[in-house]
Image (cartoon, rainbow, N blue to C red):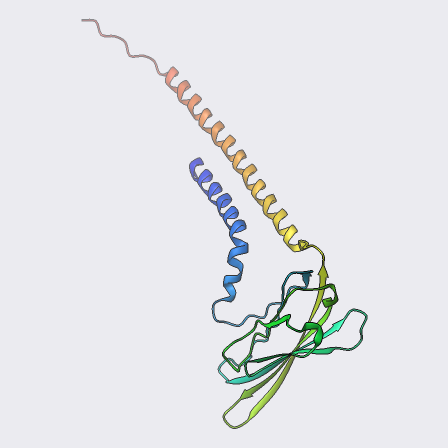
Length: 222
């Protein structure tokens, strides 16, 4: 292929990589907004004094079957052996049960439906005492024509509260790999440009030599 094609393709790849890197943090949540249920693990690191979402999603296996569900949250603090019931959500009614979380927990899950699939909650003004294990418990009843079938799902979230936000290892590695890819592509582009320059220069020299080797036409005497 021609050198111009190589340059065009390489530049396009570099620009695309940069676009993906800049767009990824913004575009990532969009994949969850298409109406389909996707079970995503909760974040596990909260910053003291900030708010934090405890995620808990349990997708219904039979999407065409009507259902109703109740969600409960339990908490086991560091050093403790038993879970304490802290929150309940039933029939669009949220109840904070444990005094430690009074006025600090909001429902952040499914709304305007008895068929809960997202039981996430939001903790306001996180404290270091909120570190520990949270258990999300779904009790779902599938409503068939002739009978009802009850299922239960339990999910655990191990929450750590820190004084200052830290970047996850996966985020750091992804950024490093992105920069390595961009630098590698730019080096490849440089090599291709040098190659094309030499090829064009060689073709020009060959044309000059061919032109010089052609004998000039004898002049005609009048």
